[in-house]
Length: 96
Image (cartoon, rainbow, N blue to C red; front, side, top):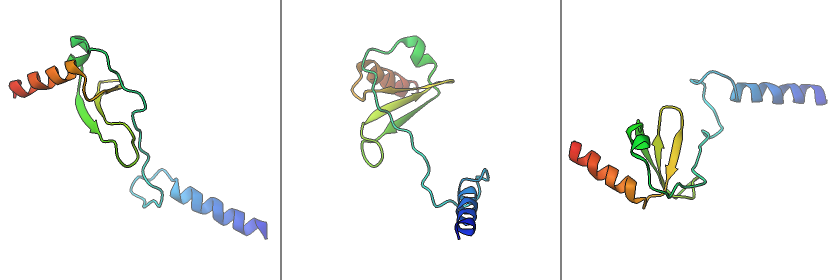
């Protein structure tokens, strides 16, 4: 009786991993966490390319607190106490 149970397992797996994003899924969404943090001063060139900033908390799935700088083609994980990032935040706040 391996035939029907194997078929049912494959059918269930294909439904769960199907390409339809609107389909309900039992599996949790994948998360990506920073595993290494950049601690050196950040260049002005890099900071000018920032599109979005995200805070990664050190709880749940991720074990490091970090600021994630999203650039056009990549993301960079920055230590939360990075001085050049703090100065950049202050500058951005004054601009607004």
